[in-house]
Image 1: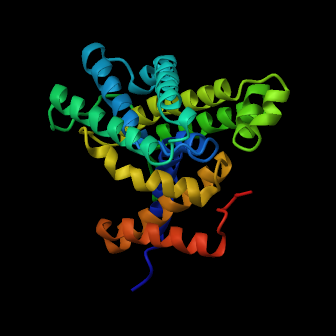
Image 2: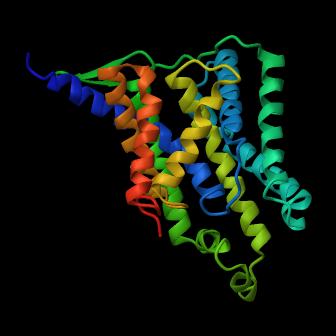
Length: 291
């Protein structure tokens, strides 16, 4: 029996598209955890919140979920700034961010989930868009638009973030804030303001990631838990604070999961992907593009 090369190629392409989605989900963690060293365990909860806002607007007004998520980016940015300010005043300023700060984000995770359950119940919700059903066919290669569109927009988002972090003064200050706050103060830059801006950006990315998620699959309030392990794993595997590393790690993890699910069944995918993470860190402890 010949090896099903067409099945393998489709699995790799599906993995790349899935990796593009994972990159969007992880980009905010790469900033908050990778650069600021803030363990925002509630990050997936903000993603689910973005999914439900996209669902409400889509079901009530018929607007495209991805365009809706772009429109509400400023609101999520403001939400992130408020969350960081509470976190800073309550924990970071007192040097209690390690354990109590983690409990704070756990609290946010469960409060957000409970509120969504009370409002929407536990039924799965979905959106309608012209690109959710169709699939592009190139010979034996299939490109479902519901995966392709989020992947392309995700890569554009990360490209813009990378340009911002490397080409602007504020972006370079964000990259430096975790390394030498005193140097920033000598340059008349307030490290707390920079960290607040960085954290707000990390939360703003969840608006888009939430729209991508509900385009790819129906959602219910607790589905974000499935991504807690993945986002931190991808962040560490890519290299702390490296957005290009995040993309590479997300793509590799997506390919490994897709091939495993295609040939061995979806139940094996999480175990194999985390095994791949451990092997990567065993040979490259700093991550793929770690400093």
